[in-house]
Structures are given as structure tokens and as C-alpha cells.
Image: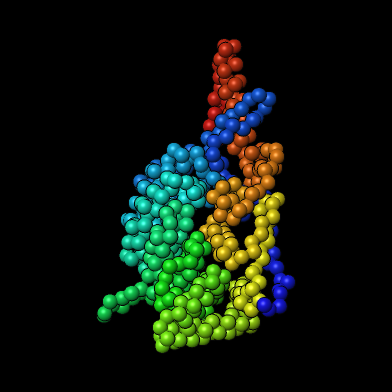
Length: 436
């Protein structure tokens, strides 16, 4: 074993009151009974705009899909899903079949968020069944990066949560693989995948690999996968290198390369010796590539952030390959600490964090699906104030918040009723019911 590395990653502290990640919208959270004064309560219907967005999918699809994505990303829409699951799923699948590239991308993201909201339940397989054919067809019929990246990420999320068994996972992984390594017939020219598509495929493929005990590929196919990811380490795009590096680290952690080498060694003498020698040479090549990328100097025009991310990742990979030391990541989720200590967990964390973006903290706090994935159990917060993000506090406590406007409306209605009972004419100028 090599020398133990004392380096520990400390991810940016992700607090629950971070404005960018946990601000809620009055139009996107569930209906609640909110206390106003004394025993008076006002029921605020905060999912009305979600219903309107769903209805608008028949006409103004892009804007409606954007609203749905924002709503599901910033909050857990369980009540809405209970009522409108089938309608939302079928409308989004319809957009994937015949929408524009932007509509396909938004619909794909919405379906991924729907799967994360529903979680690991028996009926979620319907999402996979409805989606697998349309996604496969859409990936074949369109070559623009926006569409392809969104479809690949959606396929990964839906397969991870809604797929039944390794066969369906392998099916999705092969669909992704065909985007970057298509099997073409004679006289057929394939479309060269863009860097964003290659990055998305490498990340999504590795994410699905974390759900497998080991992909049941034959040695030849494993050799192709490992050789391809190794070739990506030589690409100019650093996001491609990082995605390929994570995939290779996961493959090493799962022992897939060693298994491949052992199977090659146990095969026929001549072919086995050649295959085994090739595997050993491939391992040496990858180790040399990792060393180079861990120490790469910044050049003219290079993005410092991407360079630092690359260096840190490949230093961790080098520590693992030479000493068996897995990377440790620690971050704050609200008031709770969250840690990962394996490549398996890190690949899952990075993929889901990327997919959820600003909604990652909210989902990590409240989404039981993610709690199950990571074995994470956030502490139950006591009191209404502890449960409210800074965005919620502005929404409910600000003088201009919709809650205070609702309180004004409620009080106006109460005065109107009292004045009617007393025989006093009610003036709509003094008591404006349209204040919300």
C-alpha cells in the first residue's frame, strides 16, 4: 500500500438558508394552512400555478415546462404528483416525441425530477416503460447537444430509480454507449459526439454502474470500455477528462479491471497471455495519464476552476491507485453533516448534484429517495422557524409577502361580512379583494 494521503475535500458549505439553493416560490410549494392572527387561518393554494402549467402544456409548452421544472426542483411536489402523475408523465413523454429541442430538454428534466419525487416505489416502473422507447428514438433522430445531454441524464435518473433489475440497467447503458461508440454499417458515416454529450454519457454511464454489482460484459467489451475512457483522458476538454477519470476510478474500485485480467489469464494460453499483457499495459498507461493530469500546469486561457477541479480529482485517483485511499468529501446540508468515502458514493453525489443544481440542498433535506440512496438521515428540525429557509421567511414574514396580502384579504372579507350584517354598504375601493 502506498503512503496514506491526509488530504480531505471539504465541499462548499451548503446551508439550508442559501438563497440560490433553497428559496421557494409561492406558486410552487404545496398547499398549507398558515396561521395568521389568533385562531384565524388562511388556506393558501400554492400549487395553482403548477395546475395552470400542466394545462398550458397543450399550448405554450416551453414556458409551462420551465415552470414545472422550477417547481419540482425547488420543492417536493408529493400532493401534486398524487393527483396528476399520469397526466404529467404522458404530457412530458409527448413533448419528447414531437417537441422542439428546448422542449425535449425541459420535458426530460421534468421526468427525471418526477422520478426523484416518486422515489423507489412499486408503481414507478411505469415511468421507465413509458420512456425507454421515446428516449431511444429521440437520441437517434436528433444530434444537437442540448437535446442529447438532457435525454441521457433523464434516462440515467429514471433507470436508476424506476428500472427493474440489471437487465434494464444494461439496456440503458448500452443506449448511452451507442451515442459515443456507435456500431455503424459499411459506408455509414457517424455523427461525432460533442464534448458535452461525451461528458454526459461518461457521467451517466458511471452513475448507472454504481447500481450494478458488476456489469456482465465479456472481457472484450470491458477492454473497449476501459480503453475508451483512457482515450478520453487525452482530450482537450477538462470536463471530459474529469468525467472519464471518475468512471475509471469507479471501475478500479469495483475490481472490474482485475476481474477482466483474471478472465483473460485463465483463457486459452496464447490469446490469454496476449490479453493479460494488454490489460497490464493498459493499467500502466492509465496510471501515467493520471500522474500527468494530477500535475498539469495551467496554460494560456485555461480556466482556473476547471484546472483545480481536474488536479484535485486526479490526485485523489492517484492516491487510490497507488495506496488504496478513497477520497473523503464532507459538506453541510442545512445543520447536518454529510460525508462520502468511496468512489461509488462520490459518482452518485456528483451526478445528482449536477442534475438538481440549486435544488440539491432542498432535496437532500426532504427527499426520502436521496436519503435512501446515500443512507443520509437529516435531523428533524423543531419549530416552524427552524423549518423555514430564508426564502420562505421572506415569503411568509415580509410585509409584502403573499401571506400578509392573504391576511389583508381575509380581514377585508371579515369586515365586509360584519358590515353587511350591520347594514353598512361595502365599498370595494376601501376593501380590495384583488390584493393578491
